[in-house]
Length: 120
Length: 108
Image 1 (cartoon, helix red, strand yellow):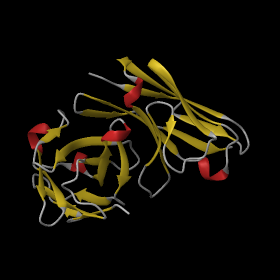
Image 2: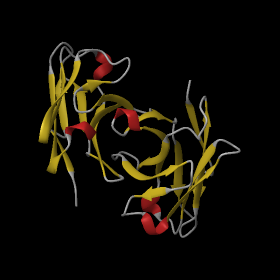
Image 3: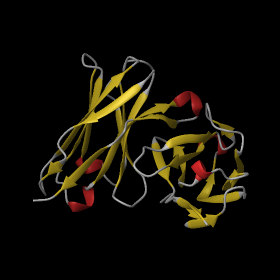
């Protein structure tokens, strides 16, 4: 059973960097999957942040591209998100997600989500 | 800029009734990459429909998807109490994922 678990600080200061990890269990991250981050501001909709492949190849949402970096740690079977120069607008629940390319690129497995607040 | 617009923003219905949720794309898209998700309060979204009309594993057959081009529909026949939630459509194209803004299905 594939499971994803986000971890990281719940509070980040404005202009700082938000850093989150996603631990993958039940499957090797080196399988033929892409892995994504999706966020949801309080009371609002879903926004795709970006995706990463086990090779390290990544694609980002153009609206966030200048501030986002994603990495993969195959030895720990996890992937990570870094978002720089954060503001209050980056306050959200952040989900790590598995992409199912065999289902026409949908998100079939979601982590429980982690709330990150940007505040001084 | 590619946009998915969902309507209505909110829908109030009673258990046992049917629901029709709309998702309109700002340009014609491949239906293969159109999906629907359900999200309940405090929970992560759950995949309902992929390829516009295929139900994901474990999804009851009262959920059905249809559509092509720019207009897609999620239909829920005979609403159950657990179906009241927020529903999102999502599209993938050229390494970019886009979500609609969601439709909140409320108990009347």
